[in-house]
Image (cartoon, rainbow, N blue to C red; front, top):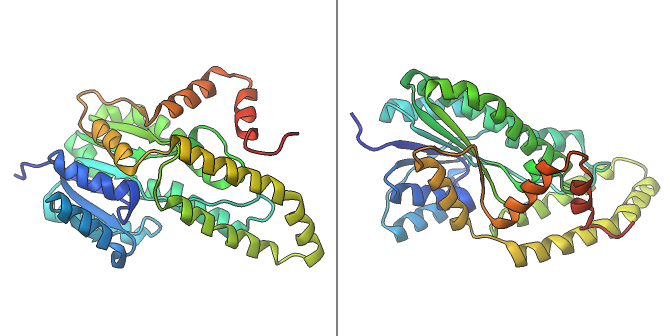
Length: 295
């Protein structure tokens, strides 16, 4: 019988997933670090070598039923169990609601919501049969509170939060604990990737009449510029490192009595407090609107 606990982590080619994989090995786990594209594993390999740890790196695409099923089956065949699942894979999207295509909206949900559902459904049966396990899922400030021009990303992350609020008390009866990790700004490649998504939304707008597209761009451009500037300031003032978030994930993975929610910073504690004490929702709108030009 394998002595070490086995952790399966998604989205480990960079950022939070990469640092979490390394820190979990240091905490005593045998880590299976997965990513969609194994040609992007070099950063993880380097980080593991520098830390003097060994990580089992495997391909797993959370958007593919077949890839998820095969990936989980391979881990169970090799190690006999999965004690910890870390749902980390995700992708942002920045764009105006009007200019975002249905294809882009569906893609954002497929990665950030249905990807979590696929992987959790694949791992859950073995945990239920073992009557033990932990599922730790990285959400976002966007899952707690809406963010301008992040409509579908925030929608997907909020769906993840509510899905686990529903699932957690049920699987707790099988000895399985669910935790949500709620970061605010984190200094990783994630932001650059989100900015790259803007081009996709602009391309979608080009399918309409040129004059109409130009009018839409003109209407939204000042707000987008204000939002980007405010976000840049927030990352400068409040941005955490991926290692800091990974430490919170390890805490949730190893605590004797894990909490359901783990805000990763004082900023997140404040925002969550504002969200859940304001029954009107007006405070949340004001916080989101503060990144836009004044009314």
